[in-house]
Image (cartoon, rainbow, N blue to C red):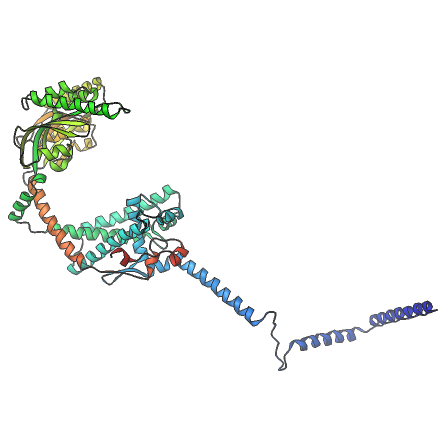
Length: 556
């Protein structure tokens, strides 16, 4: 019975639900719309506060919203700082150093530093990551990095240039129109040079500049550095040229620097010990004793200059050395040798320039595996005037060319000299032959070399030209390591100073210029600024938190 009542109840509920649905379907449209609007108004009312305004939507706590805001600000700040450093804004505006009150930015320092990196470490594009890593390396003293070394060099140069530029401005020094034009042309060439280097590196030009000179650097910064350095150099040169050099200054300078202002004439032969690469010490000593004996034998049989070459050739056993002597007999005679020429080993220079040396002195000198026989002839003040010559070069490597090539080159040189002698025998006719036949780089200029000073040309060439008896129109053939030179002497420049006097005047003026310059630099002051830590760096984290350069710690 209970089951039947339960079924009846369920049936009644189902019937009631059905009737309700039917009633809704039968509800008029306007009543339905009113009901929907009423429901929407009720929902909106729930969103209002007691004053009738809209209630705020609160999904998180106040503390959470503050944290989110702070994080957003931090992110924006980090991005902003990165952008500023990335494009070099602080590097270009803040003072890394101050020289005598004048601000030097990190960008200006970076430009100078890049040139020192190229010179000292052959490092191009210093701001590439791999080069930045290398600069962080220890320089060998456990204290300084390679970056420190470069910054030191850059700071020293900036202190030097800025201080002298300030004095230059105070003195009112300016470049002449010609000098300024040349500087402008150099600056144009500088820009083209960096464009070519960027093309060779296959990177965009602006990227190349940034990788070389640092964030924010431009070609104008590089030009400013080059221009300042050039003007300072010319300022010093102008002072040098206007030093009043007195005769007593010249005499004193000569007395103090005779070795640099005299020349010597002497004969020299070398005997060099020859041994196998794997020779032991006993074998090496035996070889050295053998050449020592040869050198002493030569000295014992020497009759001065008369038989010097013959004995040197006879006692030389090494085939290469003997061949060189046979092809170059004049090589044993050193004429117009100056101390600074480095044409002879130091042990020989020290001997021949010794004040105690006198004509006829002979000695065996030792240096490593070599023994040198020296016969001293004379020493004199270097009254050597600049000279001008024309020549026709017929190439033939004296040391390497086969005998047949040497012979052919000599015959061609002799034929060219004969053509000249059979012709008009003027400087113009010689120049025409040089244009047509010379193998030297100045052939198109008629083979001319003008106002040449001692030690500027090969020894055989200048030995003939520097002879005080040489006169305009003289001709001959000389052989050098390059080949055979058909020579035509144009003349000495007797209007200028001889070598020793020119060097003495330059020495006096140079010493005075250095003393004047150093007196200016002694007063210079340099202090570090806030941008010191930016110098030479690319990475923003390293700039902000890495090791900072401090000028005071480096003696500036």
